[in-house]
Image (cartoon, rainbow, N blue to C red; front, side):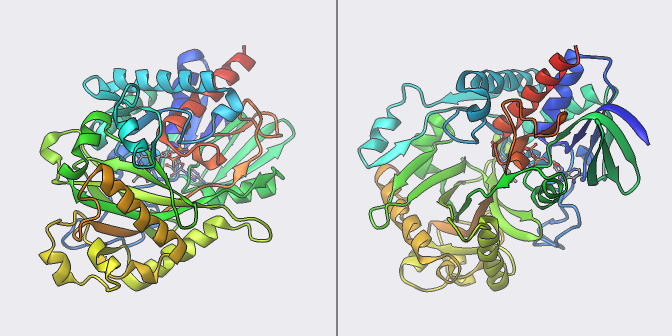
Length: 458
Ligand SMILES: Cc1cc2nc3c(=O)[nH]c(=O)nc-3n(C[C@H](O)[C@H](O)[C@H](O)COP(=O)(O)OP(=O)(O)OC[C@H]3O[C@@H](n4cnc5c(N)ncnc54)[C@H](O)[C@@H]3O)c2cc1C
């Protein structure tokens, strides 16, 4: 049994920023971080494009797990906004949420992100241009670290923390038990006892988090699931938007069903990648800050949110089934030319090879209409035509659609304004709380709990 003041579960942005702030505010605390994945330098996805071309479903996914969490190899886009990325502001207030996100931005900048750019939608004419085509631009500032600088920032944060915090890697926590006024945290090898426990297990820890809530009788409620495709097209098509804003979050209400379709995670001159969540392969994207690593393509997701009402509660299960269907037909991620989708035919390798857009991910050519529910696919097609008005070329035949992109959200855990559960000293933060779903919100939630805890310990 090891004794700690505070145990943090998960070394993603939520866990890292909790540890960072705790160490900064109180240097005499004994803190442990248990992480299911590896240390940063050992995180290596086996896909090399030659011997291993697609996901082999490793026990611990190097992309999702390890120091840096799901965001370690991400595009490192830190959006400073209350309009998307989570609902942290509902717990701590809008002003405080923005202040914390700005604080996190400052730490990223001072730990390697000095030369990176902060983009903003404020005073942009693009908003007006969008409105003229019935498209709605969300307001945000976004710091684009890029996959390369994001890695450096994480490396610097780890080096600063490693002598002040005990890190345990490849140490998935199996159980968290409450024993009077302490928590017992069990891994296969170790047991730690602590007065306060911060759980920040992210999206990959969603299933495990459900068991923790069940065992400790913490109320939860079901959340939404977002389903859609990743669009890839020549970077020139979106250059007038991405040069000014980097990422534009645009929402469109479809004429047919009045569903909301939105752009998500835009990666100028980036690459499309596989994402493995609990063994299910979906699609995602990122890009590098270093111009030498730029591609000729821009990619972004088009997503439709699905909320379910009684009696069905398992929105993630619904998303998983759709992703499984795509994995069954395509052996992983599927790709289709927009022109083929509209003509009701599958894409073949020769049609992809003849296309003017070269895919950045080796995916299986197929037919997305056999996978994605009609209502969602109709909405995506309508949105592509709407975007074509502000970015002509979006609806070209050679535009590539990868499927499926699914954004799973954790069920919402019942927590109070301090992100504390009904059990005193047990906090649930970041994406595993269902409250955040972005780097900036997850990091801000970590700072928030650290400040509260150091106040309580005074
Ligand atoms: C490819 C990709 C690109 C992305 N790009 C962006 C982007 O550009 N901008 C943005 O805002 N967001 C992006 N996101 C989302 C962002 O990464 C997450 O919102 C963010 O990482 C959430 O932080 P977190 O700390 O809550 O969880 P995570 O980052 O998921 O970290 C949780 C950690 O907990 C560990 N863990 C889980 N269960 C256990 C357990 N039982 N015991 C011990 N450890 C456990 C996991 O291994 C993981 O390392 C991206 C995500 C992906 C996958």
